[in-house]
Image 1 (tube, one colour):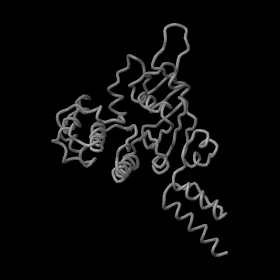
Image 2: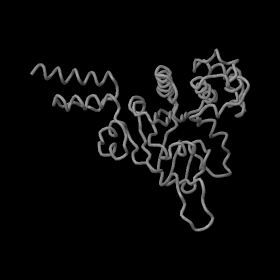
Image 3: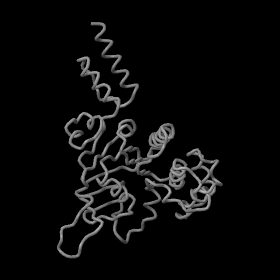
Image 4: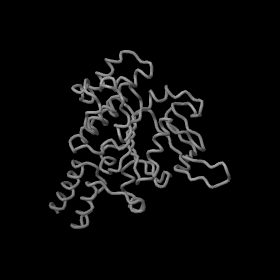
Amino acid sequence: MGIVFSKVAFAYYRPRKKQSVRFVLEDIDLNIETTNEFIALVGHTGSGKSTLVQMMNALLLPTEGKLELLGKTVTPTLKLKPIREKIGLVFQFPEYQVFEETVAKEIAFGPKNFGMKDLEQRAKEAAEVMGITGLLDRSPFTLSGGQLRKVAIASILATNPDVLILDEPTVGLDPLGKDDLLKFLKNLNEAMNKTIIVITHDMEVASKYAKRIIVLNQGRIVYNGDKKTLFAMDDLLEKYNLNYPNSVKILRQMEAKFGVGLDVNQHSVSDAYAEIVKKFGETDEQ
C-alpha cells in the first residue's frame, strides 16, 4: 500500500516512428512504505532523481512498466487528488510553487484544494510547526529563499500527508537553518512515523539522517540499501564518484596515519569520537 515501481521506464518524448527511445529512467524496481522510512536519493546531476520523485506523486506517468501508489495502479484515468493528499512533494525551487496573496492563504491552499475544513486552523498549526507564524500576513513574494522553503513545506504539512518528498531541501540554507530543517524532518519521521524522501547531493545529510540510501546513475538504481553497507563499498563509491561523509574520512585518515584498526563506518561526530577513544585507549593501555 505504499509506492511500488515494477520494471518502470520513463521517457519525456516517445517518437511515433520506429526510432530508439531515450529513457530518462529504466528498469526501476522499488518499494517504499508509507510509514517510518527516511530515504536519501543521491546521484549526480542528470541521473533521474527529480524525474523519479515526480513519478512518486503521479506528476509523471510511466512510459513502460507498472507504478502503484497507495495500492492503486497509476493510469491516465486515475483520480490523483487522494494520492497527492497523502504523498506531498516540495520542489527544489519553492518560488515556483507560491502564488497566493499571503502566506496564510498559501499554506491553506492545499487543504482547500482537497476539500478539507478548518483551513485557517490548519494553516496556523502548520506555520507553528515550521516556526513561521510571524509571516502569515506577509506576501510570500517578499520572503527570503529559506523562508519560502519553510512556507512550501508548511503548505504540504497542512494536508497531513503520510509521505513527504523534498527535492534538495537544504540548498541555499545557512548551516543553522539546514540543521534545524533536517532535525525537524527527523522528528516527523521518528515521532509521527511519516516517511521522508530527500533528494540530496550532500552525503553528510544522507549519512547522518537517512535510514536507507538509493543511488541513481544514468536513470538506473545502482544501490538500494542501508548506509553502513553503502559506505563500506569502496569500489561502488569510487565508480560513481560519491563522497564519504566527513566522520568516515577522518577515521580512514587516522587509521592510515597511525596504523591502528578502526571501525571507520561511523556516521556522527559522537560515534566517531567514541571509536577513537575506544581504540586509542586500548592502544595506550598496551
